[in-house]
Length: 365
Ligand code: HEM
Image (cartoon, rainbow, N blue to C red; front, side):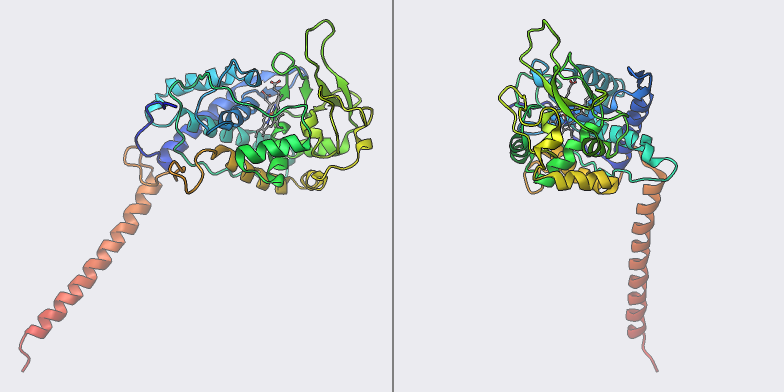
């Protein structure tokens, strides 16, 4: 596949910090009021979903096929990020694929700072390292390439196989990465499913796991009467405030969906289906936000490095510390001090040596 002309220069610490600052500011100020009358940061969840979908396939490449049903609903975040990319003239500095990854990281950080778990006590903040060098496809941000996404009706075997094959994830990685569903919601107009996973859809914490463990879920069909839908089965709590897909519930419960997604054995009460082999990990994350956040960092890193793994020709690069164009005082001071002291130390040794030679050459009586 052809690739866009890629930004040629190194990406420096200062440049990445400036771009992340732009993104954080934009995401923080991009709010809307949800159906529960809460003001939410509405780009956080779509930006995270975008990074995931961009990295499915051969590699993260800044290209999404909006005709692919699995990508429905991503157009708004793509357009918003593209406006920002153009407005700040970033195409010569950072690829779109890197920009989207940085947007997802900025969004997760905004959402983690909002978590109720962080108030009043400080709480675990994710630390997702950003490395750069992802290459955009020739037609970025659009493409006709079609990728297969995981099936929301799928069972544990389907979910583990998809993420193992796509991103080389371990079982623990998969359970940790599905916790991304603590953000955002499903919309009938996009996926045919409907609802929130947790009460606070823009707060990044382990609520997804506590909801799964603590609420009583039963399965129901959510297709509207008269629609020509293929059938959407999801799990809801009795008040129907929150939901889970089979692909979520299978992490805790041993469910065996029919081909259409329906689970016959425990539809009225998911707990009747017994424990899944991954249930211990779900419970561990439900007990400890810290454990989950640390594991999420790892699984997400695998996802956003896809196609650029260490040791491959295209492996991602560290940000460059020396920034000749956007020098920050701290980097200048640090590098000039250390190189300056090295030079003076060398001069001092040279001088000592010259004095020694001179002393030897001068006749002594
Ligand atoms: C078995 C795996 C997965 C399945 C079947 C799945 C499926 C879905 C579906 C159907 C939606 C609803 C889209 C809509 O109606 O707008 C959704 C939303 C979302 N997904 Fe996943 N997903 C999976 C894994 C992941 C992973 C690994 C991530 C990120 C690391 C992720 C991030 C999100 C986010 C943040 C949303 C909310 C988007 C929004 O509110 O706009 N998902 N997912």
